[in-house]
Image (tube, rainbow over all chains, first blue to last red):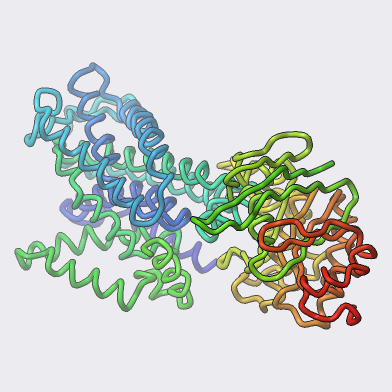
Length: 324
Length: 252
């Protein structure tokens, strides 16, 4: 009950934010909400299936570029259509990439996902006639729920309708993921993470469960990626660069992957911390490197692990299983 | 015949763990596989249950060639197993472990948006198995927090939760005190009767258990079947008994 009350309070604060906070802080919430969607999916793979992907920026890029293609090459401007197209493209590519990657585990899985991510990054960079190369592509302002909002000032559009649209999508994504991890599939996925040999002996096809988790996480990452484009009005290949994959793994560790809401908290803290540190020192990666080292050594359960004692034991075992 | 092995050979590099093993398990049988360490007992169970692929030879299960179909597919066909070294899901509770096995049996593992909490059938079936194995009062505990004997019991119980037609138990009483061994065997036999298991195959070192429960005993030595006979016939073979268990025949 305490947890639900806290969630309700946080939700009320997030709902009221555009009315009480300066636009700058509200605008920072947009990438947070997009990354939160990405991380909900990534954590199905990381925390629940025990597979650490270093290439999920591939799907973020796919989602973002799908939005750019749809708005600039077709007459479709509906964000609902963009999100659906991104989910479809992300799902199809994840099905193909995942079919190969999930046959491997531990470092081999991580390296294979990294390789696919870099292949896509290079494609975006070099096929400039299609992708715009390092300059990227424009994302025209999408309509929301069939309403064309081109007449609105950009900031008003982003801190108003787009903010609430992103929030609604995040809530939907959270509810769907909550059902997934509490479903029979979610339980079977945890058996696969804990002991694949035993899971197989119980008739649970390990590769099939890992593949499904990979596809779902790919869909989530693509949907999150589609939300990243409209606020800046542009997408470029850095969205698919390997450091982007590193960032989302970092966010997951920062929040704590053993907890359902850990990665969401990680995304929030990362976005605001990055903004604050960048405004103070130019070498923000140095500071983030130190934070990452601190988390891995002293707080493997992340921020949620620090709040809920007893979780680090679970987390450290999953970490050692995934990395050994 | 439920399961049949034909000329199984398994090499680990140069080492021959199984050397032309052929055997069959009939409906209603309780068969024990015995032999000294390194005889190939666990390798045989691993090959029969699809965990290992044989180098050559065939395994037939319910008149179907199951060569290379894998452990998960075999389990879905009705063959369950437990392991010599305890295999549990450390971060799942006892109830969750048994529920996962029941979900697998009911083919509900693919349900993405169904609520587990509302699946009464799966929960009640899991509870029934927990009660059968005396684990009901610990069903909320994480598996890794169980005592060693209970971990073993949970490993076996999860295999029974599949309601298999045949179950292969690799040293089901290892790591359990001598006093508890008979109690565990009684639980196993009762559970087998309850869930309708048609045949049990066990690897076992304790000769009191082997001779007390088996309809037939298969003796392995250096990867070969040395004997395949009823306990009474085997008991009469003094040379074989000495070779198998390293003690005088008169001790049995």
